[in-house]
Length: 174
Image 1: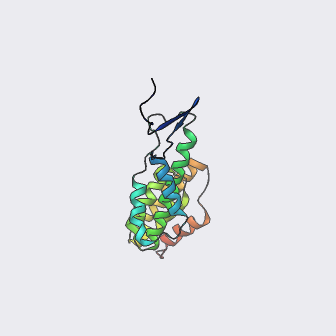
Image 2: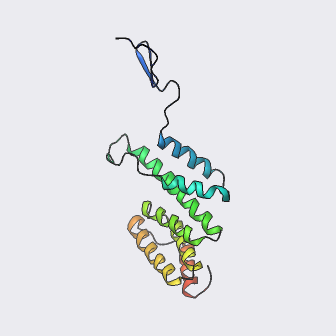
Image 3: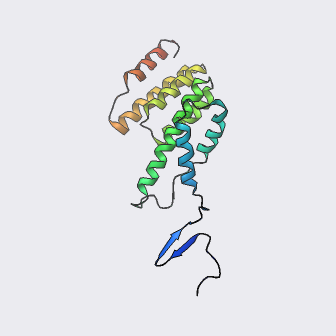
């Protein structure tokens, strides 16, 4: 039976069916990707945009978590996860640069939760804890970094990470 009017989400053209012919469907993953990419191209992120960017990143969730090992889905999941990690790391850097170490800690920890091999996020954590006057906590982060890098990459910390730890041990500012 032929429809009485045009479909809103599909258009039948001969033997073909076209999805979303009127551009009315919005896909949350596509919106997330476009917004995060847009923010990452404007570095430093404007101060007035930080909270909106943080809210955007806070809404991230793995794509279709009930089907994590579907072969067609894995590249999309990994692309979005990598974008989330890059955005969260950028946000941590921005907060640290603005003198907001507590916010930097939140976002650096989120990066490490998703990508424990991201040594730069451990460096942000070390700096943030030190700037809050918690050198012991910053040195524990160094130990966590050493362990994570060994476990994830069979690698040692970079010279910069070791230098930060040495300065912390000597009581020097980082």
